[in-house]
Image (cartoon, rainbow, N blue to C red; front, top):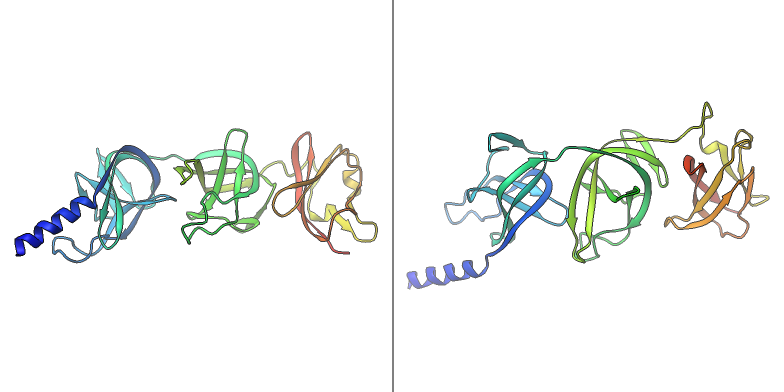
Length: 290
């Protein structure tokens, strides 16, 4: 009877294992709980190394053995927790406390930071509403000429209308230079997503010559219902762009002068940016409240 029971358990485990072909996976090495329950006895409790990616986490194995340490050595190179890596390997779906994905490492290399320059924009959440931990809405992206990147800090998407990094605030439509690492993954609709983890960020194109631009240079006059630009800007050939809070362009005025009428717009909060020769020199928020 006991042998028959073991036979059925073995058959069940065999049927619950699905192996996929070799592929490339990019993410961060983390320590996470052992996916195998305390029983049987050869499955010790504790933490093992995983690869953290946005759509899926993978328990890491070398020669079919889990890695229990806080580092691993592969072909003489040491890889530690928090390293960003690209792994070539084969994924097997197994059943422990719950279903988990096991990634057998066949090749691994560290991912070097990149430097990209672009514009912070709001954009649709790249993850569809299900599962529940992926709520609908917009997140902040970096728009560049060649690629859009969903932005993360500490591996978390930025849901707010601004980024605060090391005490500095970065708003929608700010031109910035970001140093970080990229993880490429595919969401359920088979669309490839590039996720940029911010390691350093700075604004670019925030001044012309010796002029200093801030939110006091552009303001809303509730009496005349116009956006007013400071007299120090009147000698500049500028373009004013006005956006709603979803990032939709509502108004684009070239050679804007010192006032732009917004009488036809309803009360609310709007985003603006000023450009000279297609370069952003100033951006911020305008509150229209008559």
